Image (cartoon, rainbow, N blue to C red; front, side, top):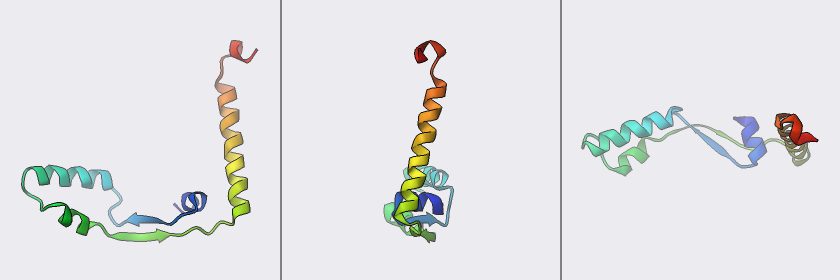
Length: 86
């Protein structure tokens, strides 16, 4: 998560419940059947486990991004059919 945070250059909050999709689906099912309270109750259930803050210097971030772009370009070039390369 720290690497993603460094590359995006913005803070990321990781929730205490990491299965947020399942939690959201369960809440929605309970809400529509009248078992769970309104959105306020759902919002209050969210708690931060950890906050990640950017720690990578801009030069390193740029170098990592350039390397990623080169890897993507190489992958795309390798995935082309042989006839398209000519």
